[in-house]
Every structure is written in C-alpha cells, then in structure tokens.
Length: 68
Image (cartoon, rainbow, N blue to C red):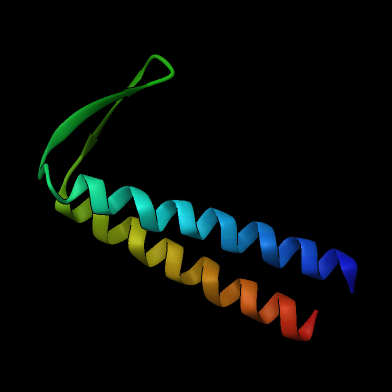
C-alpha cells in the first residue's frame, strides 16, 4: 500500500511538471531551448503531446493510488 502511494505521488509530481512547462511554451510558438547541452525545439504539436502524456500520467496515478 505504501509503495502504491509513493508511486502515485511521484506520478502526480511528474505530471504537474509536464503541465507547468507547456504554459510557458505556448507564449513562444517555436523556440529552441538548451537543456544540459542538448537543443530542443518546441512547437504547438509538441505542447499538445506533452499535455496528453501528462493527462495519461495523472490517470495512471489515480489507478495506482486506488487499486494498487
């Protein structure tokens, strides 16, 4: 039970981070970011993908929390 709770909290935290970053990225439609020496180019399509992944992580977190 405790492992499921820890897993759910971690999934919720990761999905919250994914939700925060697209809000900043929507202001700049296409921009190149340097993260730890690697360049990433974000577009509106990437933002939609990140939001979809974060929604999936939230749903998985709820399932793990309630049925784990």
